[in-house]
Length: 402
Image (cartoon, rainbow, N blue to C red; front, side, top):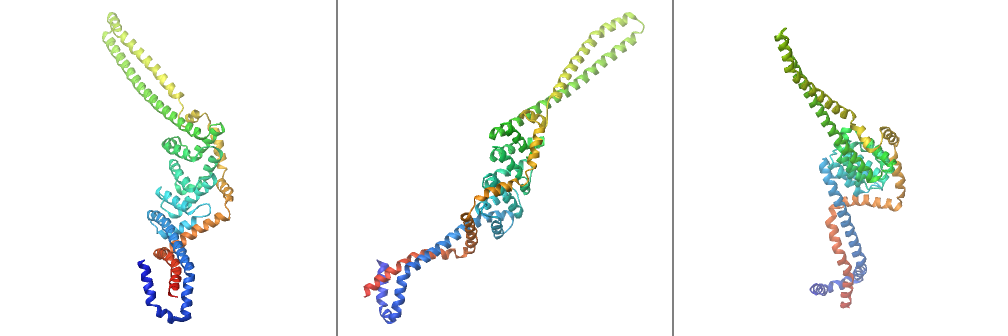
């Protein structure tokens, strides 16, 4: 009641002034009282709109500002780039997330960031995934194949062909190749090769996670085979060295034998005694050489029969290099496939989606411009309800005075 008492006292003290105002003053007060609800509602709505727009813009600008800081550009440049990049299929929130992921992955040029983000968004449209999810999952895959993210747009058709012709999931594919990166490099398997291999497996009925599991298993088997081959090569080298030593030993025994024979001269008894002395040593050494030669032949045969590299990998998978080459050719013929599928998927967007997109852009632009008025909006939001209650109060006081 304290506030009401103050207002009543103020009106009582000002009654003479109010009476002197006459009809014109009374009309003005009545107009204010009658329209205070509308004025208060308008102030509340306007203030609320300012607060809503500035709050939304602040969040987006803050997120873009972090990316801008890492790229060494201004927040305003980053916001303009986001607004240039966004469209009805690539919402601002997805643009911001994609920009951030690509920057954190090492990209340093803002225009190339925008190009890569757009390429991943188009791929996402083609296969039904959000741009940020595509970006997050494919960064490790591109790293595994040594493909710069700046060149992402050159490889999206390969991925669209793979994911549209098999049931392999992007996350599974990416984690598989990322884990096997060193082996893929050793075997010389590139992105097109990996896609073709998985499509060959799909044609043979090995789909989805089963295909990537077969891929990993085959790599493991090849690794084991390579280790066994290396071990066999070591054994061959060791056996060859041993064989040389044994032959040298035989030569030494033979030389000693000849030397002693030469000292015996024409004495047949001495010659016979010397021969008996060296006969067993020569026989034993020749037998050692024969055994070592047989072992060496076995080791060499095992090395010669072992498959290595891609040959062993394809053999483990039960496919052939010719089949892989056939599917690689199909993939290389798929130029423009990603955009075609994206265009087909994007036909679902209508007027409502376009309006939502326009609202998103407008909110960021206007909200950013209104940021200096953020405190004003808060004040208007606070004063609005007060103004809405002022009219009835004034009307009550007017009734008291009469």
